[in-house]
Length: 379
Image 1 (cartoon, rainbow, N blue to C red):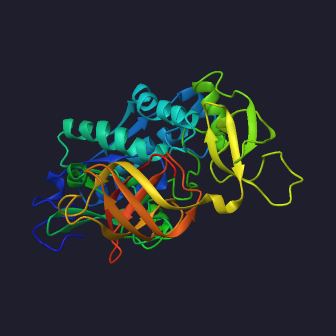
Image 2: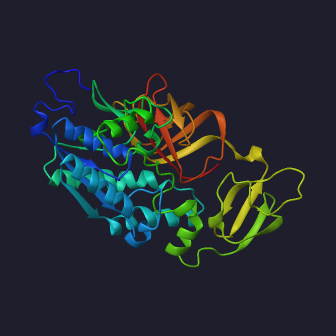
Image 3: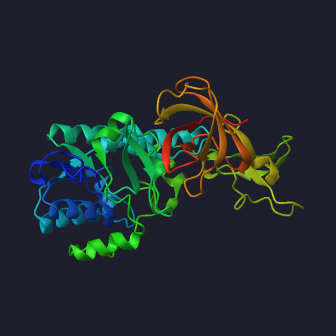
């Protein structure tokens, strides 16, 4: 909430009734509560839901955003709260901007994070532009992250509830996008508070389970999706150790990720082995002891800097980073190479850091998100 009493709760110097806000509605409880809350406060709310992939397949699938059931749920919330709701067909955009890169990244031996690309290339780009076309003053989402206004403008901060924090998935939000976005749930202390608000507003989605899967990957079966997008991708090959000795065979590099131990089919060894590298050209899954997974040097590119000034200002700096969405930030040193490239040195080695994942920067003294970049090769 703003400190200035002349501003409404979204930060504008005019009544809520004269403030139009587009709410990105997935059909889940979080975005539904955002829309209902803003509607109750008297804002001129417009709900928008994106149809991102094949509707027929979506109707038979539970637990993912933007499926047929979710579109219905979003529309019902809009009807209950009395604001307009639109469904936009973004299937082609989503496939080109997110799904194709996901498949190609896996085929190249990387471990992509498609939810970040979806936020970056679809929700906070195309949908945000649609919101502007609708003459909205801002766009609101149900993400658990905080937007605060600092001395140099809007800042991105981790959510108050660390267990629901989504800052890892939103590091590529640009300063220009941040100026237009609002995240009304970021200050809540728990998901139970969100569900209590859903009950307060009488929403039918109050008890709806959270989605767990990537929306276009049913039951976490990455390989099946990649084979559908890239027929013939699951070419068989060898499982080899770091010396090149063949230990077994596999039915496609796309079935493996860095750090994997289970399902290798090479039992009977004295010490457990883990996937330490994928060589797509040779179709090799390379395995080694657990200590080979430990990484301290992390090369980054496509950096989005959200700190004050330029990334290059002042040279290297102490920061905290996340190299996994589920782990807390750890201490690191950021060494810029250019405005979009850097090397991060982890003070304590992390296991399973893989190309294709994100490394997100945090201010070690606060909750502020300083940006992040994409891990693009291993050492």
